[in-house]
Length: 385
Image (cartoon, rainbow, N blue to C red; front, side, top):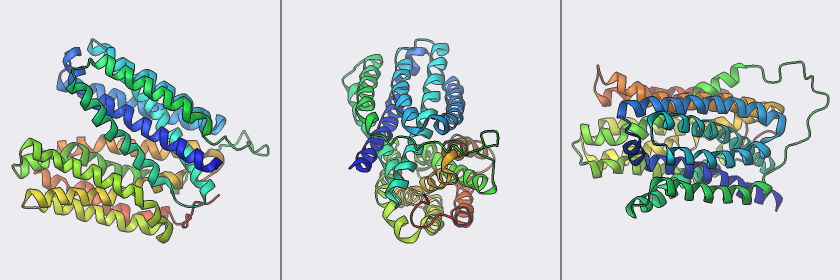
């Protein structure tokens, strides 16, 4: 019963994270208009948000190893809700920059801490359940799209909308926090003067794999609709179905990926799932029709869905005493990939076509499929305790 409640509480934090970020995203146009921020300026502001998130991730790793993921996750949940108010009431570009820096930092902290808590819950279950947590993050984003879209349709002011979301998130945090797993007692024999989390080849490879596949994920976020609109002359409405198909397929696959990992092992799963992702994006790039392209983007989402959670799980189990630090490093690599993917494709399109530029994420999927078994070789069907 205790472990079940801890799992449900961790689900709640993943939903909270996805919901909070989603509420910011759906209100970007209104916030841009109020702060008189250009598209170029918004790009720089998002870089500030990303850089702050990376700082938050690395700090979270250290705090988790000293305080435990339970304390950090609950505190980060409240901080995330508080910082959501910033973009809601910012009236200038400078104010928005400060608000997004704070929001990005809080997001970085909760990103690592909730994954660290998920690793502890998964370890207690003694079977793979990491992908299901990430499915609930996606569900939080879908919930934000519904609630945020409804508030926009009702012409509710952004500040009121984000305040309501922040209050709701704080209530969820306070209700779920007590049920998170407590940290294990520290090892009294550990040498505090020795480096607790040295860099290893395995951790570096896990980070690079997360970078490659989250780069591919970032490409889907920013370029799937552009691909249908520019390459296949789809209308803007129909083009949006590409990202919708990708998101729904990824969410659905994450709900069942753990069962597959439990049967075949993490190494085999990522090997073949990454290959499926490569096939999906290749089919999208070569597709002559809109329906086939939409189906191909969905296949791409199916392939990517359960891969990165396996890297996070493996990183959190390299050394349970330094779980937060290792997880923060791998998550940091992945986040860099998520930020870099859209930019890399945009730069390449100055010299080659968009579909040709897709060679980069396709290659990333193929290389990840080849290297993942070696990085995940020490993890069997269940994570090591």
